Image 1: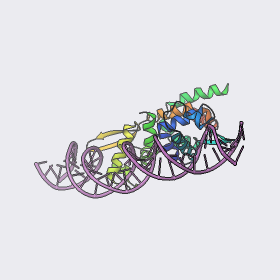
Image 2 (image 1 turned 90 degrees about the horizontal axis):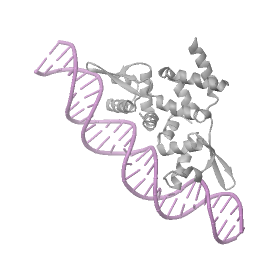
Image 3 (image 1 turned 45 degrees about the horizontal axis):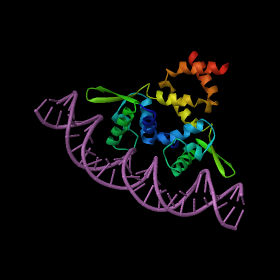
Image 4 (image 1 turned 180 degrees about the vertical axis):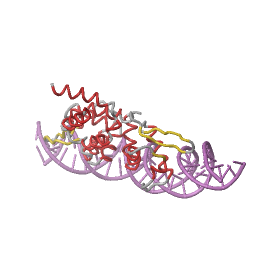
Length: 104
Length: 104
DNA sequence: CCAACAGATAAGCATACACTTATTTGATTC
DNA sequence: GAATCAAATAAGTGTATGCTTATCTGTTGG
């Protein structure tokens, strides 16, 4: 839940890939594994790290365990970015565009 | 310059503290070190990692080397966040407020 | 020039980490 | 209730990482 934990969780490419696959939508561990060249335990371990960092949640459905992205998981990082937003003025225009889209 | 390098650079608490101190303003290695309980080489090594990740730049002035935050250093991470912005709808309101302030 | 000083590099060490194979757990379904 | 299947855990291994002390490099002021 703290910044360090989240940064660390996202710092590993394989684990970030796992997270990105979950962004596509709810998946069980087997589905997450598809296309990734790592063992089943490795996926399980990565999911545990992501869960402890607050980035994903598990949803138990019978014998299956589905994983979903936690909408608030990235919040601490976004807060951190906000603190240093003075250093990304170039982003402002893009955000304006984004917000215009969202207003429609 | 790639996401993994930047995430890794920011994942270490001490190194992130170094970065945050530079956000306060341009500093040389000795000034960065103040208040942090690590050796001079450790600071030097952290600065190298941050520099290779594109987060800070060095400015040589005679015998002194000053370090400054690179304004574009965080861009790859912000791009990454944008890709998953659907997962932080709660942020939109805050950003709107920010943009209003900036418009004035 | 050379003494002094800032900072980088070298070398070594202990721990963390990502991964593997083997095994266990836990929940259906037949 | 035994077989089956998904996922977790155990145990072990090689590498990466963050740190230290010691040494080197390079610039400047006396």
